[in-house]
Length: 294
Figure 1 (cartoon, rainbow, N blue to C red):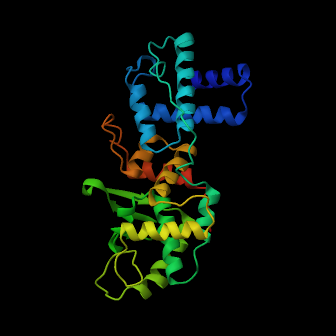
Figure 2: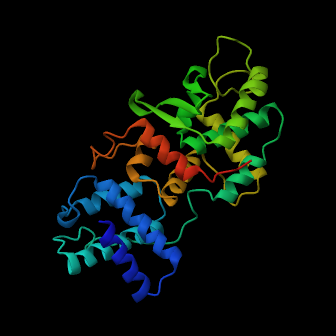
């Protein structure tokens, strides 16, 4: 596979005068698909796997232009394998993406995230907001998952947490090193001032000491995005989309990202099996190793 992939990339680079950056993007797109198909024979793929993969890309909330690029790359790669290595099928041959009218992005850039996080004040509520918003991004949390976190879910020693998602299914997630300082500061300095009942184990509290609600988080995030001067109001799911997009853009495989997000695709029911916690953590750290939003 490595030999055929390198040959294809060199062919594209030479014949289409593509840049090294485009060559790297093609490599990443192809490797993500190969990771997705697991043990399937690349030279004899079922025709419906192309649409299965397309559905998975849409689940991440990627822009149509990004999806179109990935599908175009894979269509060219499979065509190359058919012409030169005897591949029997091209699952992407009949797939065309409707680009439609260009929309504002549903995820935030690194710069937008930095502006959002740094705009939070250093007081009790500002520190809570920073810790909340950045954790939702760092772990790709649903807003309900962030609101339902309790202290016993958190392991500050190895920067991990246990999240209960849809169907009460648990998954282990991680947060990056630079965020650990923010989280520790919130827990030790801010939360202790907000809580008025020591039996309350909720991680994120409102100014009355009660657990934050999804609607409350939506309001806080909207106000903070206005303070940060972002071009559009930010809703909680955009932080989750941003996490997924940045993980994929930095080379993480779809199975890894889907496991981190707690997604279950109806068209690909086996893609999350046999992914160990160590493997997930290794890919997470690799994709997020350059994150520093302090």
